[in-house]
Length: 371
Image (cartoon, rainbow, N blue to C red):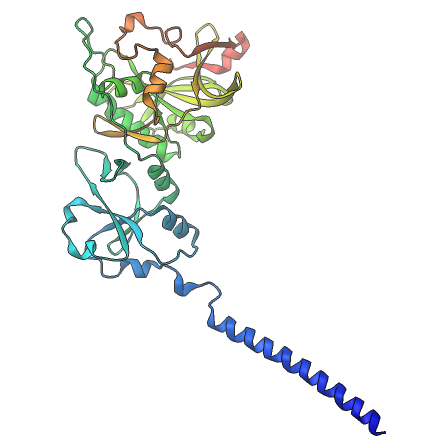
């Protein structure tokens, strides 16, 4: 009998030991959970923390912080990159503020961009909506602003003096570029980033202006960035531009030409750039269509329009390797002027190849010229 009782007692003690261990483990886990916040909020950088004690306006430039702010996720406490107007460069309070890494900028009334004083130099458009949290400023459209930063590295033009004794200017350079900047902004409103290309790109890089004897301007957009709603917009009363021509299709050689409804009358060709694989190499191309249905393809090695330029006081985006592409399109003597009378839009380009032909039936839908 005593033997059975002893076995029973040992079994009970064993069960009690296990129960005590489990209870202790759960309690320890509960205590640890209470002590360590699940969302780590106490280690997150909050707007309230950044806007405290600011006596001058500051613009958040920090890409990582802006991404986290947009996604409403936690950003760890650290120094945040901000932009401050150069006129506050002697403000000791902001200079000594441990919360911020400061980049000063120049804000010239003669330019439509902010000049960030960095190495390398960077510029971004002035035109963007913002949220104000006291003196703390955050861009309203963060994805677009991040694209501004992505394309902000500044490139200088060559400013070559071109001798043109017998050629008269067809366009007023400043007025033409002002209209081009308006179109750039309109395209941005539709979510499309344009970049200088063709003759306008050559004019900027070679002589820091437009080619005076040219008759139009040129912009290009990657086809994947197209917002087709803009074509409907051009037909509305509110449109500031009129659609003059439209060639090609969405998937092949699309381009259209517009001009200002009420401003300076200059036509701008808007090309759409496609991707292709030529001779084992990634290539980009824009199309062209002749009045007889002939199709042209203008080829470019893998295009990289991720840098910024100043064209007569306006910011435009350009390739980061301009001389390489200028030579590819215009040849070894790109720095010499070619009179318009000696230049054919299709046959003179060094990067052109024939690309088939639209049928007579297709031309009814792919070749539109406004009467």
